[in-house]
Image 1 (tube, rainbow, N blue to C red):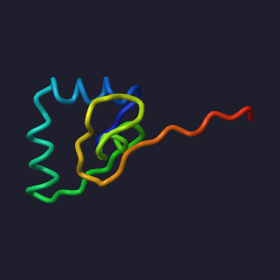
Image 2 (cartoon, helix red, strand yellow):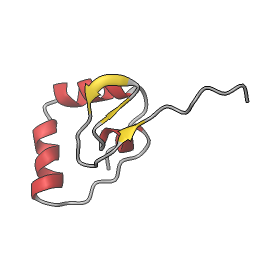
Image 3 (tube, rainbow, N blue to C red):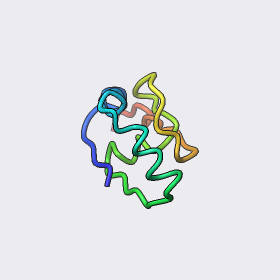
Image 4 (cartoon, rainbow, N blue to C red):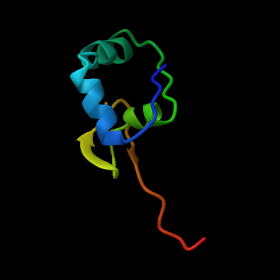
Amino acid sequence: VLPGVGNFGHGMNMLNASGLRESLDWFALEAKKPILGICLGSQLLGKGSEEADEEGLGWIDMECKRFPESEN
């Protein structure tokens, strides 16, 4: 389970700084173990987000987009 609360950029920075990135990549891509991303964790699975300039894990071919501004 890859949980998360907060900003995409900060989340990726902290994940990369933790030293877990290589282990997570191996676990998901080489060992082919299922990963469940919840909230920010699901956003991190993709290539990136409009919320920040950092790249995501890139495991899923997707980018997170903001909802358009609305008066409602």
